[in-house]
Amino acid sequence: MNATSANQEALFARVEQVIEAIRPAIQADGGDVELVEVTPKGEVRLRLLGACVDCPSADVTLQIALKRNLLARVPEITSVTAVV
Image 1 (cartoon, rainbow, N blue to C red):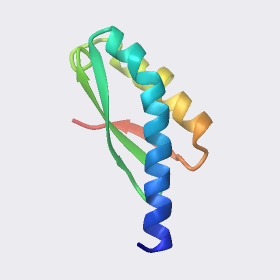
Image 2: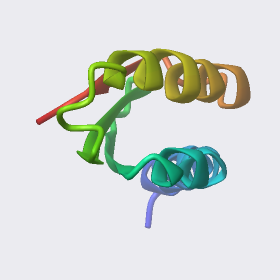
Image 3: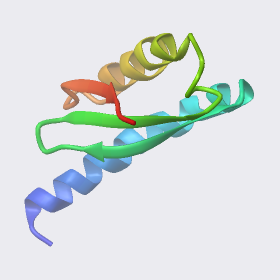
Image 4: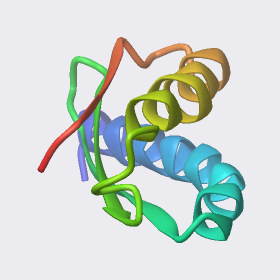
């Protein structure tokens, strides 16, 4: 394993830790979130699941709960987007 892939794996793990801390609140409302990808440029791609799929507050969950926490706790992150 080279240094770049080790760094990428460590970044993925740190992002996953933040999501795991937030996940219980999302699951309490019947939703969930899947970490799809963290790109080498620091872009996080998430998939909202369960009740989040059709929820009118899904954008708020993405922006407030997920994006703010990820940007605050993992400074290498440059953006957070939802994918289908």
